[in-house]
Amino acid sequence: MERRVVITGLGAVSPIGNNVKELWESIKSSRSGIGNITKFDTADYTSKVAGEIRDFSPENYLDKREARRMDSFTLYGMVAALEGMDDAGLKIGEYDPERIGIILGNGIGGIETLTTAFKRLYNKGPMTIHPLTVPKMISNIAPANIAIKIQALGPNYTVVSACSSGTDAIGQAYRWIRSGESDIMVAGGSEAAITPIGVAGFCILQALSTKFNDIPDKACRPFDKDRDGFVIAEGAGILIIEELEHAKKRGAKIYAELGGEGITSDAYHLTAPHPEGKGAVRAMELAIKKSGLKPEDIDYINAHGTSTPINDPTETKAIKAVFGDHAKELKVSSTKSMTGHLLGAAGGLEAVITALAIKNQYFPPTINLENPDPECDLDYVPNKGYEGTIKAAISNSFGFGGHNSVMLLKKYE
Image 1: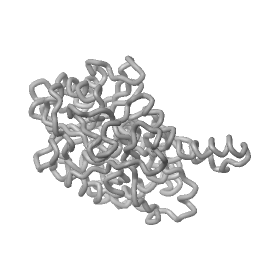
Image 2 (image 1 turned 135 degrees about the vertical axis):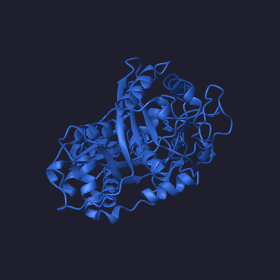
Image 3 (image 1 turned 120 degrees about the horizontal axis):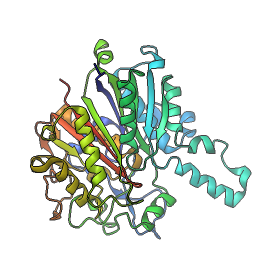
Image 4 (image 1 turned 90 degrees about the vertical axis):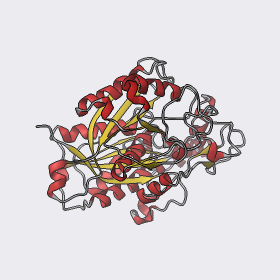
């Protein structure tokens, strides 16, 4: 009999809340976390909006000396992971350290640290860069720091697959538990790429929204006819996942069950999805097949929904291909409309939101959907969420390079 895997803890640092409670309150209030970029001067940038983390204080979990030794992407991941551990009721000494591991997703790593190091290198010379430049910068350092903090001796690594990273990390962690090699895994994603080079790189690709610089809270508008690009964001979303019997034995609360994952490649283009969404179709089909469910059993999709001209109709087309007539019955929403696009952390945060949607039986909204695109003709829960029955849901993540990752979550019964 295959081991069942459940979610017993959640943690989040996001543009709409620096913990899970604030995040969910913002979702239910349809609140946008998008504003003008404050981290650097955007005078020469075509896009001037982002989902920044604001009023962030890691002191509840870390002392100031610890925090100074970490890039922001590690800080966000660390705080979200520790919140998740607290939420799950897991304390050092009360679990087998050899049976707990950490897998996080990240798209870009410590680009904040790298940017600072380059400035010092070229302005003041090589011996002036911070001595912790490398250990602050490398992508694997977030799970490494978390492992030290919680004394996790199991598998520990980072998945880097662009905007699919967070969902891929959860899928990998799910497999570790299913295989019997771990009992508890910390999984999700973290990202902090709102830097001059991070934003400039996406600007030059013409990937970011530029038409709403004066009204930033309207900039991210998935499935809307007036969308013109994604909005870069930062933060972290972490799940504590656990083998069912292990969770039951210690009396853990359960948010939802992980039912299956689908991971595929388009093998088509570096930055564009396959025009028919073939990789996305296969990933959704795989996740559903592995869960033992049928397409008509799915009630909700947390869409990749980037608010780009290409993604939204392509994802809509893929959903129709997978679900047929049932596509019209589905509730589909893009919570990026509120959070912006957390890149490698998107799948982690959106898995947190999907778990909360199942636990609370609530469909999160797609805000700013004011002028629907005729090519996007599903029920995207426009502008305001509402209560409803969610027995099973999927969370979609698709990334540059043709990466497709889908995670299926279902109500625990």
